[in-house]
Length: 145
Image (cartoon, rainbow, N blue to C red; front, top):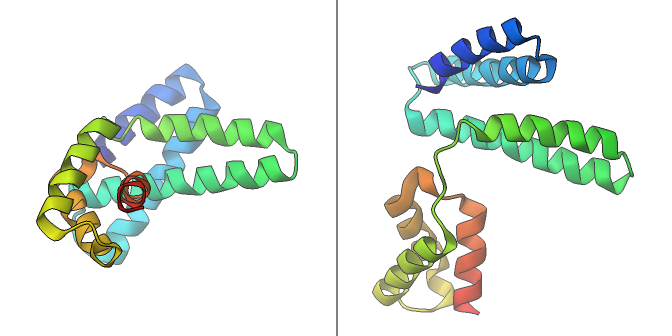
């Protein structure tokens, strides 16, 4: 489980004196604890990964916002945090692998924009934690265009 791994890495960051890593891991730990409290049950690995992805998305959004207002230092700090968070994600499938599953879904449901949701659902169900929903959505849009 990710929570136990984070606790171990927090200790390592404290010993190493790595403040950025320590603060990022504490924020992630806090987000996971908040999710645990709100769900009122032990989080599954999928739920933990969803929290990690949500935290990464927050960093991406912050990077975009900082770059728009020309605050490169803050954007770089967010990028460092995002890199630390990405360590907890499983290795993502390549676009080729995703495309094969999309092709399989299209052959099953048809290449109609009306089947967009079914195709995405099929791909996400089949590939699970190996894919990012935004990547799948973009690839499906390209194939249906």
